[in-house]
Amino acid sequence: MGAIFGIVGDGSLREVQAMGAAVRHRGQHQQCWSPARGVYFGQAEHRPFEVEASPMATDWHVAGDQSSLPGRFAKDGPAALARLRGTFSVACCGGPTSVWLAVDHMGFKSLYYAVLRDRFVFASEYKSLLVLADLPLEPNRSAIQHYLATKSPLDCQAFLACVRSVRPGEVLEYGAGHLTASTYWRPRPAVIERSPEEHARVVGEALLSAVERQVSPYEQIGITLGAGIDAAIVLGAVRRVAPDVRVSSFTIGAGETDWEIVGARETASAFGTDHHEYVFDASAIRTDLPRLVWLTEDCGGREEVILQMHVLAHATAHTKAIFGGYSADRVFGGMPRHRLVDFADRLPVFGTPLRELFQLTQCGASPSSLAGRALQRALYGSTPPEALPVPGAETMPSVYWAPELNRYICGTVQGCPSYQHLEPFHEVGAATFHSPFLDPDLIAVSLTVPSWLKSGWRRQKRVLREATADIVPPRIRNRRKAMQRLDVRGQMGEVLCELADEWLVDSAIQQHGLLTHAQLKRLGLERTQVRERREVALRLWSVLSLEWWARQFLTTQRGNPAAAAPVLLPVVHVPPRSKLSLS
Image (cartoon, rainbow, N blue to C red; front, top):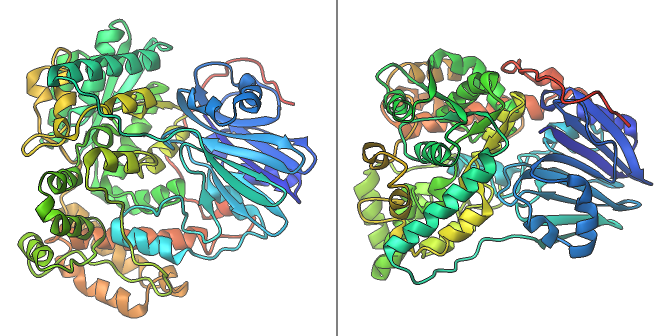
């Protein structure tokens, strides 16, 4: 847990200390050192350091001794990282003015970097880079255009034009002014001929093995529950492999009758957890949205992310090991988009219109075929999804497509956008996060299962449901997919309209040319539809988020980015593991 940051080339420890001050929420204990000429590292942790300064800086939650990693990397190269299990970001000094960077297989941890004129800089959060006077504060218009169209960030690109992130499963090496990338892990389809029952057995064994490895260090854990089946499956697996572990469960929703709360209550009762429920007041969006944007450095989080921010603040106050079912849908084909991919595979004659419908639903791209336009009219009538065009954006948004489900899963399972929100929330609470569906071994097993056992005509994640038949009660295991939402027709819609009136009058978006006055005026005219059409409400939410990003990251006080930060949810301090040991 914590953060890493540093400079390679022209720099100083004083600058690295300033970079660390921008991420105090990721660890009050900080150290800075120079492992070689022209290399300056910094590291933050929530507890006093157990490992003194070394050739490596880590934000690390991996079983085993990290001190042997540089030697293993020198011997085996990137393959040394493939054998790790857990979440991490790491920077390792390769000699004078050289470094290699990496993050975990799935990209749960982030690591941003920028190549400047005389140096290379990196940090767990790019707000650390804002303290550097030579970092250009220019917006990445294509990335912002992609966000407004898809509600998700552009692959490995930040909203700042010069900032990129390390790709999951890769090692990035910088030396002699050059960058090179090499892959240490990529998921690959490897379907094996088995009966459906045998596939379910193998998946079930891999799931229990991953959960046992993750839960074994703890006597007490927390788990976030909703009305879906993914977290319930994880909870059932925990009860099977570690029946003596104390489990507290946490849920949040819009009210006592919200299906998220009702469903979570039923799951908690079935497994006998110490259960906690919280009701969210939509008026909190006023203060929470700026917090969310500052903490996550992106604008992709909608109301379900703010709900998660609150429930995790409560959960991390009780326990420092938080489990969840995140990424099960991505690994086992549980999203609505997976059905379109699967239908295109099963019905190749409709491949083109289904691909066009996919692009329409995911990024607002208009179909060109007659069949595609017919599907658009059938689904959306006269008001299809539409993204606001960003002046100066060079590319039209599109999203990854593969006309076969396992290939699509391989292309999208790494770097899930929700990690950008979950990881900072856990860091603020000084907690570690676990989901067996982030485990590379379980992912590899899932890719031995044919697509037809994942996404079906009527039921998705079929193999996962059947694999857990003996650990999850049928009433819970057979639930349909649940989506965590607030009702735009109620208080949420009212709050969004009020914020638009307040925040978009003197707009940083317009000041920096991200949207025009005419576009903002049109958005204002749409306010009457916010409480009637969810698509309009989400478009307004996206623009309000972008407004706060522009205020915080483009007009921030240079050298003091914390001055633009709203007050975060309380950081829960943890007792030290040992006496303070600083280099």
